Amino acid sequence: TCQDKKGYDSNHNCVDCPIGQGINPGDFRCIECPENQCIDRVSLKCKPFSEGQKRELNTNFCTCETGLGFNEISKKCEVCNEGFGIDPISNLCGKCKPGEGIIDNETLLCGPCPFRKGINETSGFCVECDEYEGINQVSKICGKCPNQEGINETTKLCQKCNNLNGEGINNQTRICGKCENGQGIDSESGVCAICPEGSGINSINHFCECVG
Image 1: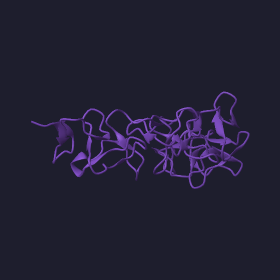
Image 2 (image 1 turned 180 degrees about the vertical axis):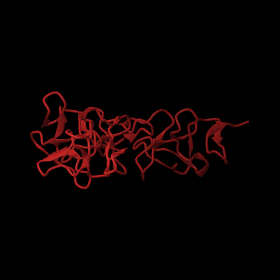
Image 3 (image 1 turned 60 degrees about the vertical axis):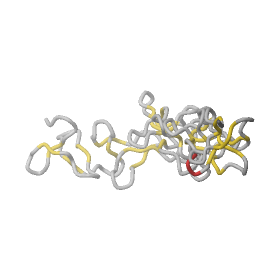
Protein backbone atom coordinates (compact mmCIF):
# COMPACT_ATOMS: atom_id res chain seq x y z
CA THR A 1 0.00 0.00 0.00
CA CYS A 2 1.00 3.65 -0.43
CA GLN A 3 2.60 5.55 2.42
CA ASP A 4 2.24 9.15 3.69
CA LYS A 5 -1.38 9.86 2.85
CA LYS A 6 -0.97 8.95 -0.82
CA GLY A 7 -3.36 6.88 -2.95
CA TYR A 8 -3.14 4.95 -6.23
CA ASP A 9 -3.86 6.72 -9.50
CA SER A 10 -5.24 4.89 -12.57
CA ASN A 11 -1.73 3.62 -13.43
CA HIS A 12 -1.34 2.20 -9.92
CA ASN A 13 1.29 4.80 -8.96
CA CYS A 14 1.28 6.25 -5.44
CA VAL A 15 0.33 9.93 -5.74
CA ASP A 16 -1.17 12.81 -3.76
CA CYS A 17 -4.84 12.53 -4.64
CA PRO A 18 -6.22 15.49 -6.64
CA ILE A 19 -8.09 18.19 -4.67
CA GLY A 20 -11.61 16.97 -3.92
CA GLN A 21 -10.66 13.25 -4.04
CA GLY A 22 -10.04 10.99 -1.06
CA ILE A 23 -8.40 7.59 -0.60
CA ASN A 24 -10.72 4.59 -0.84
CA PRO A 25 -10.05 2.70 2.44
CA GLY A 26 -10.67 -0.64 0.66
CA ASP A 27 -8.25 -0.56 -2.28
CA PHE A 28 -6.40 2.75 -1.61
CA ARG A 29 -7.37 4.26 -4.95
CA CYS A 30 -7.97 8.02 -5.27
CA ILE A 31 -11.73 8.44 -5.72
CA GLU A 32 -14.56 10.91 -5.43
CA CYS A 33 -16.02 9.88 -2.05
CA PRO A 34 -19.64 8.65 -2.05
CA GLU A 35 -22.25 11.37 -1.34
CA ASN A 36 -22.71 10.45 2.32
CA GLN A 37 -18.95 10.57 2.98
CA CYS A 38 -16.21 13.18 3.32
CA ILE A 39 -12.38 13.18 3.35
CA ASP A 40 -10.83 12.72 6.79
CA ARG A 41 -8.43 15.63 7.37
CA VAL A 42 -5.76 13.44 9.01
CA SER A 43 -5.78 10.17 7.04
CA LEU A 44 -7.19 11.69 3.79
CA LYS A 45 -9.42 8.59 3.49
CA CYS A 46 -13.13 8.70 2.62
CA LYS A 47 -15.26 8.21 5.73
CA PRO A 48 -18.96 8.44 6.64
CA PHE A 49 -20.07 11.77 8.16
CA SER A 50 -19.75 12.06 11.93
CA GLU A 51 -22.53 13.80 13.86
CA GLY A 52 -22.83 17.44 12.71
CA GLN A 53 -20.38 17.05 9.82
CA LYS A 54 -20.69 18.07 6.18
CA ARG A 55 -18.34 18.42 3.21
CA GLU A 56 -16.21 21.50 2.84
CA LEU A 57 -16.89 23.25 -0.45
CA ASN A 58 -14.29 22.50 -3.18
CA THR A 59 -12.04 20.24 -1.04
CA ASN A 60 -14.69 17.74 0.19
CA PHE A 61 -12.86 17.64 3.56
CA CYS A 62 -14.96 16.66 6.59
CA THR A 63 -15.97 19.91 8.27
CA CYS A 64 -18.37 20.76 11.06
CA GLU A 65 -21.44 22.93 10.71
CA THR A 66 -20.61 26.65 11.14
CA GLY A 67 -19.65 27.51 14.72
CA LEU A 68 -18.83 23.93 15.76
CA GLY A 69 -15.42 22.27 16.10
CA PHE A 70 -14.52 18.59 15.82
CA ASN A 71 -13.82 16.72 19.07
CA GLU A 72 -11.26 14.00 18.35
CA ILE A 73 -12.22 12.01 21.45
CA SER A 74 -16.01 11.90 21.02
CA LYS A 75 -15.67 12.02 17.18
CA LYS A 76 -18.50 14.57 17.11
CA CYS A 77 -18.88 18.21 16.14
CA GLU A 78 -19.33 20.22 19.33
CA VAL A 79 -19.43 23.75 20.73
CA CYS A 80 -15.89 24.71 21.73
CA ASN A 81 -15.03 25.53 25.34
CA GLU A 82 -14.98 29.18 26.35
CA GLY A 83 -11.87 30.96 25.09
CA PHE A 84 -11.28 28.34 22.40
CA GLY A 85 -11.64 28.94 18.66
CA ILE A 86 -11.71 26.61 15.67
CA ASP A 87 -8.53 25.97 13.70
CA PRO A 88 -9.46 26.57 10.03
CA ILE A 89 -7.07 23.82 8.83
CA SER A 90 -7.66 21.01 11.34
CA ASN A 91 -11.28 22.01 12.21
CA LEU A 92 -10.45 21.22 15.87
CA CYS A 93 -11.32 23.38 18.90
CA GLY A 94 -8.34 24.88 20.71
CA LYS A 95 -6.51 28.01 21.79
CA CYS A 96 -5.78 30.15 18.74
CA LYS A 97 -2.13 30.44 17.68
CA PRO A 98 -0.11 33.30 19.19
CA GLY A 99 -1.02 36.54 17.42
CA GLU A 100 -4.41 35.19 16.26
CA GLY A 101 -7.87 35.67 17.75
CA ILE A 102 -11.38 34.29 17.30
CA ILE A 103 -12.51 36.33 14.30
CA ASP A 104 -16.26 36.48 14.94
CA ASN A 105 -19.16 35.14 16.99
CA GLU A 106 -20.65 33.18 14.12
CA THR A 107 -17.86 31.03 12.66
CA LEU A 108 -15.59 31.08 15.77
CA LEU A 109 -12.64 30.54 13.42
CA CYS A 110 -9.12 31.47 14.55
CA GLY A 111 -7.19 33.91 12.39
CA PRO A 112 -5.44 37.28 12.25
CA CYS A 113 -7.78 39.98 13.60
CA PRO A 114 -9.32 42.47 11.16
CA PHE A 115 -7.82 45.95 10.76
CA ARG A 116 -7.94 48.07 13.97
CA LYS A 117 -8.98 45.09 16.12
CA GLY A 118 -6.90 43.37 18.79
CA ILE A 119 -7.34 40.23 20.90
CA ASN A 120 -9.23 40.35 24.17
CA GLU A 121 -6.91 38.40 26.47
CA THR A 122 -9.80 36.93 28.52
CA SER A 123 -12.25 35.87 25.80
CA GLY A 124 -9.77 35.31 22.96
CA PHE A 125 -12.06 37.24 20.56
CA CYS A 126 -10.97 39.95 18.13
CA VAL A 127 -12.40 43.20 19.52
CA GLU A 128 -12.05 46.94 19.31
CA CYS A 129 -9.71 47.71 22.21
CA ASP A 130 -11.01 49.76 25.14
CA GLU A 131 -10.30 53.47 25.32
CA TYR A 132 -6.67 54.20 26.27
CA GLU A 133 -5.63 50.71 25.09
CA GLY A 134 -3.63 49.82 21.99
CA ILE A 135 -2.77 46.61 20.14
CA ASN A 136 0.58 45.06 21.05
CA GLN A 137 2.64 44.77 17.83
CA VAL A 138 3.82 41.21 18.64
CA SER A 139 1.07 39.48 20.65
CA LYS A 140 -1.78 41.50 19.01
CA ILE A 141 -3.43 41.63 22.47
CA CYS A 142 -5.31 44.77 23.59
CA GLY A 143 -3.75 46.50 26.56
CA LYS A 144 -1.90 49.46 27.96
CA CYS A 145 0.96 50.31 25.60
CA PRO A 146 4.54 49.76 26.88
CA ASN A 147 6.51 52.74 28.18
CA GLN A 148 7.36 55.30 25.48
CA GLU A 149 4.76 53.87 23.11
CA GLY A 150 1.50 55.57 22.16
CA ILE A 151 -1.51 54.46 20.13
CA ASN A 152 -1.50 54.98 16.36
CA GLU A 153 -4.89 56.56 15.74
CA THR A 154 -5.26 54.90 12.31
CA THR A 155 -4.19 51.32 13.06
CA LYS A 156 -4.69 51.28 16.88
CA LEU A 157 -1.25 49.60 17.18
CA CYS A 158 1.10 50.53 20.03
CA GLN A 159 4.17 52.25 18.59
CA LYS A 160 6.81 54.89 19.25
CA CYS A 161 5.40 58.26 18.14
CA ASN A 162 7.20 60.17 15.39
CA ASN A 163 9.03 62.66 17.62
CA LEU A 164 10.95 64.14 14.65
CA ASN A 165 7.55 65.25 13.41
CA GLY A 166 6.79 66.78 16.81
CA GLU A 167 4.52 63.91 17.85
CA GLY A 168 4.30 62.65 21.40
CA ILE A 169 1.83 60.68 23.52
CA ASN A 170 -1.27 62.57 24.60
CA ASN A 171 -1.36 62.21 28.39
CA GLN A 172 -5.15 61.73 28.42
CA THR A 173 -5.92 59.60 25.36
CA ARG A 174 -2.49 57.90 24.97
CA ILE A 175 -2.78 58.56 21.21
CA CYS A 176 0.26 59.72 19.20
CA GLY A 177 -0.16 63.24 17.86
CA LYS A 178 1.44 66.65 17.59
CA CYS A 179 2.11 68.17 21.01
CA GLU A 180 0.29 71.40 21.86
CA ASN A 181 2.09 74.72 21.49
CA GLY A 182 4.59 75.20 24.28
CA GLN A 183 4.81 71.45 25.02
CA GLY A 184 7.84 69.26 24.47
CA ILE A 185 8.22 65.49 24.71
CA ASP A 186 9.35 63.91 27.98
CA SER A 187 12.35 61.81 26.93
CA GLU A 188 11.63 59.06 29.52
CA SER A 189 7.91 58.54 28.95
CA GLY A 190 7.42 59.94 25.43
CA VAL A 191 4.46 61.99 26.73
CA CYS A 192 3.71 65.57 25.61
CA ALA A 193 4.31 67.91 28.55
CA ILE A 194 5.33 71.43 29.46
CA CYS A 195 9.09 71.21 29.96
CA PRO A 196 10.38 71.73 33.51
CA GLU A 197 11.85 75.05 34.50
CA GLY A 198 15.37 75.49 33.17
CA SER A 199 14.82 73.25 30.15
CA GLY A 200 13.75 73.95 26.58
CA ILE A 201 12.47 72.04 23.54
CA ASN A 202 15.05 70.50 21.20
CA SER A 203 14.25 71.85 17.73
CA ILE A 204 15.02 68.50 16.02
CA ASN A 205 13.61 65.70 18.22
CA HIS A 206 11.26 67.93 20.27
CA PHE A 207 12.45 66.39 23.56
CA CYS A 208 12.62 68.54 26.68
CA GLU A 209 16.28 69.09 27.56
CA CYS A 210 18.34 71.23 29.90
CA VAL A 211 19.31 74.63 28.60
CA GLY A 212 22.79 76.07 29.16
